[in-house]
Amino acid sequence: MYVVSTRNYDEAAKILGTYTDPIPDGLIKAFKDGKCVLFAGSGVSQRCLARNRRPLPTWQELMYLLTSEADKKGLISSKAIQELNNLLAKNEYLMVAQELLETLGEKNVQSVINEALDPDGIIPSRLHELLAITPFRFRITTNYDNLLERAFITTWHRHIERVCIDELQRLRSLLNLQSEFVLKLHGDLDRPETIILGQKQYQYLLQSTEYTEVLDDIFKNNSVLMLGYGLGDIDIQLALDRLAKSDISQQPHFLLCARDTKTHTEKKRLAADRNVHTIEYVDYFGFHNHIDTFLIGVNVALGKLKYLERMRLPVNARIAIHYPTNLTEDGLFVWNLLFREGAIICSYEQQRNQLQYLEKRIADDFQAVDYLLFVVDDKALNETSDFLPILERAFNSACSRGAQTIFLIVGAKSRPAFLEKNINAPTFYVNDDFSEMDLTLLRSYIAQDIRMGYRQE
Image (cartoon, rainbow, N blue to C red):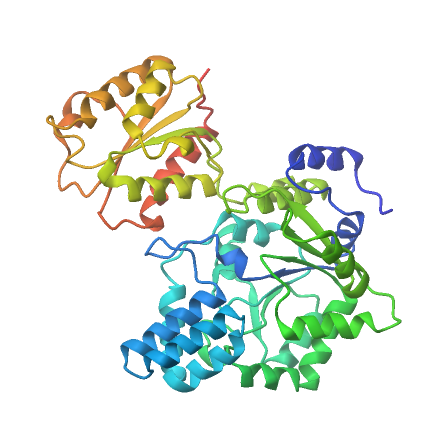
C-alpha cells in the first residue's frame, strides 16, 4: 500500500462520504509518482450548455444533426434518412458517419460541428476547471471542443500545449520532456483537418503503426483515469487488449462511472481482462455532479487544497426558485444551471404548481432557504397579475426571516414599476432568449455572497 498523509486521506474520505467509492491506493500512487493521465470522454462536455440551452451533442446526436443538414440541403432521401436512423439505433456510428461525410462533404460537416460546439459561446464547466487543476501527468480527450484548454487558461492563467494525432513526433517530444499538454486524440475543432469521424478515418488510425505504438506506450507506462467515457472507441479497446496479452508489468487503469451502470460481471471482466478498475459514484438527476466530489477528494488526499482555490466558487447554498407559468422553461433552465453549479435546490418536487408551493414556503417561514430567486417578466410584475401579490408576501416573509431575495427579470425593456417601491434586492436583467453566458453575473454574485459569509441563521 502506498502511504499518504493520514490527515489528508481522512479529510478526503469525509468529502466523499457515501457519494463515491473510496479513492484506490493505486490511483493515489500514480498521482504521487507523476504517472496519472486523464482520459476525458464526451460525457465531460455534456456538462456544458450551448446558446440554445442544450448540452453539447453526444456522438449520436451529432449524427442526427448531420443527417438533418443533409436533409435540408436536399442531399438525402427520406428512405436513406430512415436507414441511417436504424443504423444509429444499432450503434453503427462509424458507418453512419462515413456515409454522411461522403454525402455532405468535409466542409459542410465541419460547419455543422463548429456550430454545434460553438467554440466562443460555451462556458467551461466547474468539472473542466477541476480537471485543469488536478495534477495529471497530461490529459487525453476524444472531444473536438476546446473546453479543457480554456479551463486551463481560466485556472492557471496560462496556455497549455495541445497536440493532435498528425503530430506524433511532437507528441513523443512532449512525452520525453515531461511537458503538460492536452492530446486531442480524435481531432481539434480549431484544426478541422484533424477531426476523425468516419469509418475510413478510423481504419487509417488503426493501420498506423506509429499511432498504435504511442497509444500502447501511454497505457503501458501510466495509470489512466477515464471519466465521461464509455470505453466504446475501437482504438482504445484494441490498445487495452494488446497490453492485456503482454507479460510486462503494467500500471492499473481506472474508470469513473455512475453507480449501477456496470454489472458485477462487467466490472469483474474489465479488471481481469483489460486492467480497468471501476470507481462508482451516486448520480442524482443525471447531472453526474459527484464526479466533481471525487476529484475534489483526490486533490484533498494529495494535499492540493490550494489548487481548489483557483476554481470559480461553487454556488453551494439552499436556493428556492419560483416563476410564473409562462416562464416555466426559463425557470427550469435556471434551476438546472444552479444545480450544476452546486446549489441545493429547494423547489424540485413542486415545479408544476408554483403558486401553491410558494404559499407553503411562506407558511413554513422559509425555514430551509438561503436565497429566494424569482424568475419573472413584466407580466408577472404587473399590478393585475395573480403572481404579484404572493410574490410581495414572499419577499416580505423572506426578508423578515433573513433569506435574501434576488430577481431575474426576463425581457423587460425598462425597470418594472414593482421594483420602484423601495424594493431592496439584487436584480439582474436578461433578454428573452438568454443563455448560460447571460447568467454569469447572477452565478458570480451568489457565489461571492456566499464567500463573504452570508447565511441564514
